[in-house]
Length: 425
Image: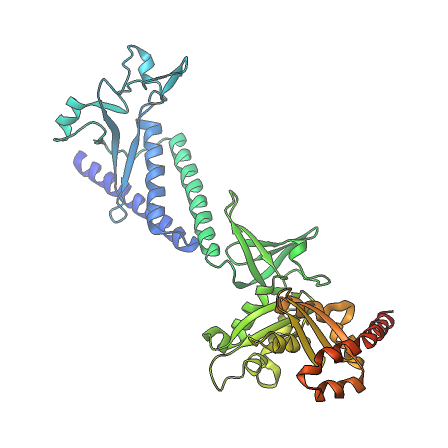
């Protein structure tokens, strides 16, 4: 009867441990933590509980959990040492838990004390494991236990909670670190001061004021796309910095909307953006029969309109990139028509002549158009207004007369500047 009772108790304990393991593994799946990490967590918790109730001070105990059967084996871990590696002290001082730590006295290093709970002499080690040598680790199997006190159970619980939190933080950090530089969808969770917190699903990111579009009002519960700007490790979880103003957000949105960009047949060469107001996009395709601008615009403007709506109505100018600076700069000044472009490659400066009546269009409101064109091309651009009578002369003049025409344009240039000043007023 006694044997039957012991067998039943053992089976019951095994069932409990099996259920315990199944519950932990279920948590692992829900939180996206690796199965091996959960097993390590269970073993750490059980070894802590075992040491609390059945171990001794200074012992190192390792638990080996069997996820299939639900049983656990416990091992006492000892280092193989000799007289040259440890200091032998008589009395209760040997029981010091920190006996393995080296001490320094008068600037001289002192050997760590020999602790029988953590150390084993070479001769004794060879009796347990043949061929043991100095520096090896000996594991001595301990008697398994199933009954734990309240304090030990609480210790195990704390270990499990802490380890799972750490594993969850690491898992989330790795997941979002891999998405750094991508556009993700989220929901506005809360707004604290000028900071806006976006729920990304498994974690929460923050939109700082400098990363928010000026004048854009986000509402609680609103679904919004954000650019994953930076992911940093933090004790409370992954520190995720989001952005709605980064130029690459426009790039990623076009990758989502335009299959040709995602496939690589159309390439975005450069982007110049003033978030919330206007963006200029230079695109190029090396494959014949593909119109890069048409691909980005889409049928009846559906593709570019989807990006504009996501950016809150921000205007987007799409131009074709050209390896010739004159043509690229002329395209960048659009929607204004360009009469001529003269460049200084050494200083990377360009003078762009436009019809006098389109000078304000070329410059843009508060100089925005020419400023974005300069960012897009990487050239310093000066815009000059040309009278209608001079345009015909420029078109008909041979190359040799370009310098003379430029000289004649100087008084017209002054007049153009005055016109632009009046238009600004």
